[in-house]
Image (cartoon, rainbow, N blue to C red):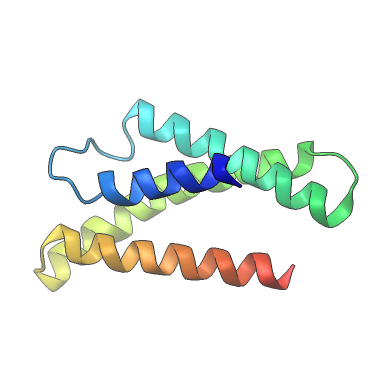
Length: 107
């Protein structure tokens, strides 16, 4: 549990800082792919007890889609709504946490 919680809190804080690099830069992208794969593997194994690889692959793909899709949505909302980036960043974090809790509680 702590393996996921500490990096998640670190990302919540770092995401709000003005000097944080783009999520599509290699360090952030690689981290999202690896954590997506690890999360997907854990959820798949817990739900099916049939190995980890299908969940890891789907989780890694989700990390890539979330990275680039989230970037496009976030920058588009900042421009469209003419609000500071941190406003959208906080809303994005709330949505991600709430959505994750919903998915894990349902499946």
